[in-house]
Image (cartoon, rainbow, N blue to C red):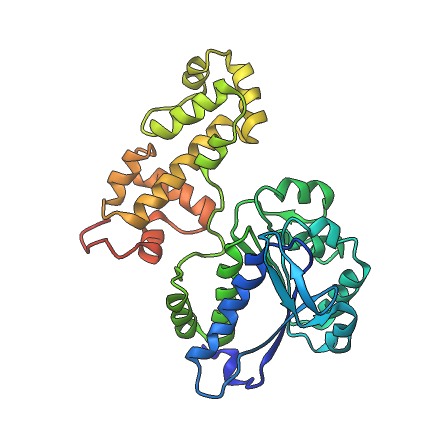
Length: 340
């Protein structure tokens, strides 16, 4: 397939919007991936012309305690807003305050009109949602903020599970490091898979994390449970995936009626017990498929799916591919040719 480099030799102008208390990795992570592309193109080819845009040119304080140097102010950058190829908006603790900045919102709106691509990193999606750019679109953000975005912007189809989402010319990523995964996908789209693979290796990144891969962590949900009884059950689930783990069994373990248990479980996790059990098994299966050479049938039994067909259906539901296909694409090379 022909990539865009074959027809476009001019650098693509990338404008990264930053602001006070933006997350530093949301800014520099994706830009490092994009800028590193030049190392793997023919000599003289300049893939991207990158600028950081902020309230004023000069130092911008980030949530990590470090300062970045902005190339242009929002007002000065309006002069080339029409020429922006890829608009990127960082996330971070300062996002909600940044959304009150009229100059920031005006530049974002102006650049978005003609940009070939509009990208948000983490909570930068809130800016796009506020501008109405995500209305009727599927989008994601950091899992912590997904419920907030869904409530505040009901026209947005919030995908709380994906690490990044592409809907037309708008790309949104989940939290922090997923911005680098998204940026690598941009390199793949612009310059082809071979170049993207070299960029991934150079940055010691996995080339394999797809946009549909989950940002859910069963262990993280368990660690945040405040109700001691529910926390005990979550820990039991994670350590006993091969057990039936029915609501009746789990409610008895929590010393509650099934009705009270189901209600408290949903309050703590935003999931039903059955949904959490499936998600925990799915997560454990993914890790086993990626990191071990155990046969698929054995993994299905070990994590509680009991048979490969049931596990296959769950993988298709969550990722759109079977467990075997997932292993073929994303394993660390430990699998021999005799496995299922």
